[in-house]
Length: 233
Image (cartoon, rainbow, N blue to C red; front, side, top):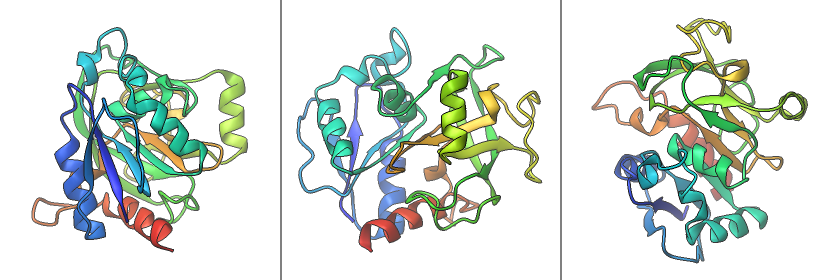
C-alpha cells in the first residue's frame, strides 16, 4: 500500500500518522509538502491533524487552497482513497470534498480527552474490520470539532449510509445533547462522515494514537487494517 501524508505549515500529527500506517501496513508512507502539485503512484492520501496555517481565518480554510489540494481533488475524483483526521477533516470540508462544516466546540473551549465512538457504517474501506455498532476509544484534541450541516445534508448522509462514526457512551448509547458523550456538541453526535463513493473519510478523533501496544490500547488499528485490506485486494 503506497500512502502519502500531506504536511502543511502548522501540521503536528504527521509523524504519528506515518508511524501508524507503517506499523499496520509494513510500508513507510511518503511525506508530501503542501506546495507540491502531484500525487502520482499513491493508493492513499492522508491529511493529518494539527493547526494548518495556525487556523487563521477558519480551521482548514487556508490549507484548502494550498497547491496540493487540487491534486487531492483530482485524486479523489479518480476514485482514490483520502483520509482526513482532525485538522485534515476540517480541510476536507473546507475544500468541498466532504459535506458540512466543523464549528467551534459548543463549550467554546479546546478539548483534549478520550472519547468513545460507535461504528455506524462497517462496509466502507475505512471501517470494514469493525462490525456495525462496535464501540472503540480514541483521543480527541481540537477547538473546532462541532460538526454542522443543513437538514437536507443530514438527511442525505443518513439515507446514503455516509455517517461513519458517532460519539457515544462506553456502552454505545448516543445522545447528541449529552456533553459527556458528545463533547463538542456535534449535530447528531456525528464524529466522522464519508463521501458519496465512500472513498473519502474524515473524522475528528485520532485513531493513529491508539495503534502501538507498547503505549496502551490499540483501538485504532482496525481503521488501518481496513485500508490495507481494501487497497491490497
